[in-house]
Length: 80
Image (cartoon, rainbow, N blue to C red):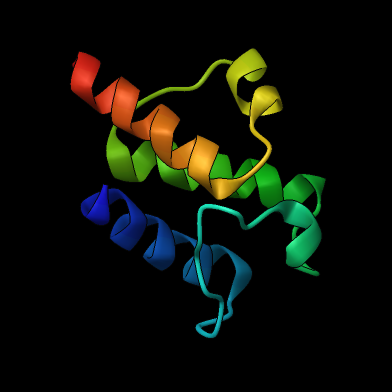
């Protein structure tokens, strides 16, 4: 999971253009002022590209925090 969080940290810093963001499992969209619907799409596309996986719309809609995103990435990369 450390590799996943390291990758997410880089992606979040790039998407939100904020190197001070601290990526924790509890982090939600409500915690990041710039995290709106458009940036959410950009974030999910960047995650898919970086980890070479694909999410369904239902999967992305069901995510409530970064911890759930990391777990979904772990499951998808393990299934490859």
